Amino acid sequence: MALQLRGHAVTLWAERLPPHTTSDIAAAFWYPYKAEPRDRVLGWARSSHARFVALAADPAAGIRVREVIEVLRGPTAPPWWADAVPSLRPAAPGRLPPGITHGWSFEAPVIDTRMYLPFLRTWFERSGGVVQQRRLHSLAEVSAAALVNCTGLGARELCGDSTLFPIRGQLVHVANPGLDVVMLDEDDPAGIAYVVPRGDDCVLGGTAQPHAEQAPPDPDTAASILARCTSMVPALADAAPLGHVVGLRPGRPTVRLEADTLADGRVLVHNYGHGGAGVTLSWGCAQEVCGCLEAATGSTPPR
Image (cartoon, rainbow, N blue to C red; front, side, top):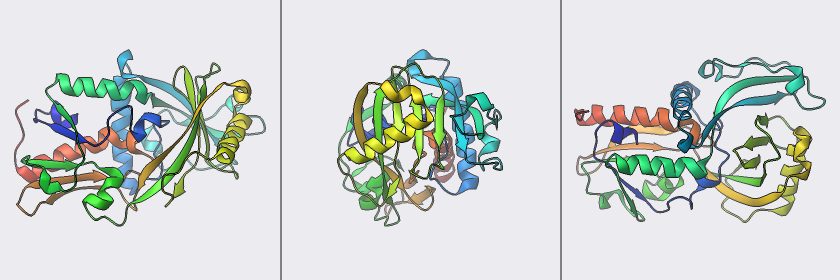
């Protein structure tokens, strides 16, 4: 979308389209998670936060700016990403779960991908972008003057990138019992817990199992997720279950965002390996992709 907005003629190739993507089931709230290197991630996250806040003004985008409360087990220095969120502050005691005395509070976008992904596609196509559903077996199949590789885990095969690995995430979807605050606990000894109200439902998480390939939802894992989230937010005790889902995040030691060159001399920009922060970094990375492509090709399209 960022390239299209800058005046480039863009065709998007994708093997799967919404609602059949990992992004469709994600909690998708702004939070830099399992993505490196931190110095670059901070800039991408900051840019994306600002863009999502601006887009939230359009109800069709499916974005709500909500309070996020991160639960802590004791006094802790501000998180490494604090500079990206001016609203970061100690959580008021009355906002914390029972028995918890420390936490951070900040405002962050929650992206309901059920609305946001169709919104993006409509915006893209109305501005002249073309979407084609097809599986790519080789970058040489693409006849475009320049390419941007956003294939996630697919880059293991497409680019021979052995540093990529799946991070299995299991989630539980329940009806929203009236919640409007995101709750997050990364330090629960039983596993990470988060409660993300999107609107009519809540996404409860979760797991982050590195090097675990796709598998059906595990009932015991789902029960553990529900227990952790209900302990943090007791109002979930009677929430109606809607479904259990599993998705694979594209893990990598560092995000790969750089310009490259194909054997025939065409420009290729890689943009993959975002771990658990694909949505969080999306707009910031897209802006850098534009800069990489235009610097490598030596041209900027007319606006």
